[in-house]
Image 1 (cartoon, helix red, strand yellow):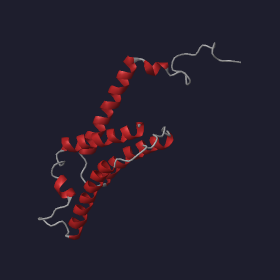
Image 2 (tube, rainbow, N blue to C red):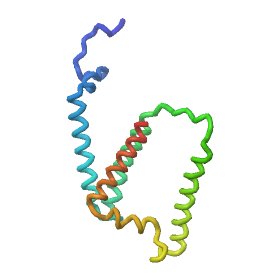
Image 3 (cartoon, rainbow, N blue to C red):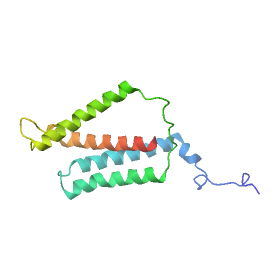
Image 4 (cartoon, rainbow, N blue to C red):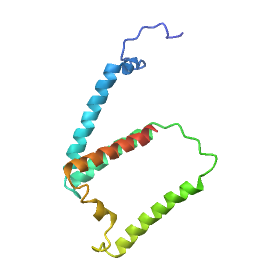
Length: 147
């Protein structure tokens, strides 16, 4: 027996047409966006290297990871060939960054050879910049999950 002729109310578990309403989608996106900005503003105000700062980073990371684990994505087929020139540019950049960090680690981050973290920390120290960086990190993680 087919259930096509059975009337279901909007919002029923099987009926998701109410999600397609542009007004409700806009409201939902506004609420989610406001919540994300508020969360990032609060997380950006935490003192670095504290338990609150750790939990403010771990919590959304765990949420995004659990969504990614629960929703298996469609796999993107591998390319037919690899662009060796483009790949080598990325490998050279990564090798240079690893070399910089390794040599800064062996020199104990002296003033004449700071680590990349020591160079970046003053740039993201202000509260609004740190909050914006947190929001960018969350949106990048969500973009990877949606992909």
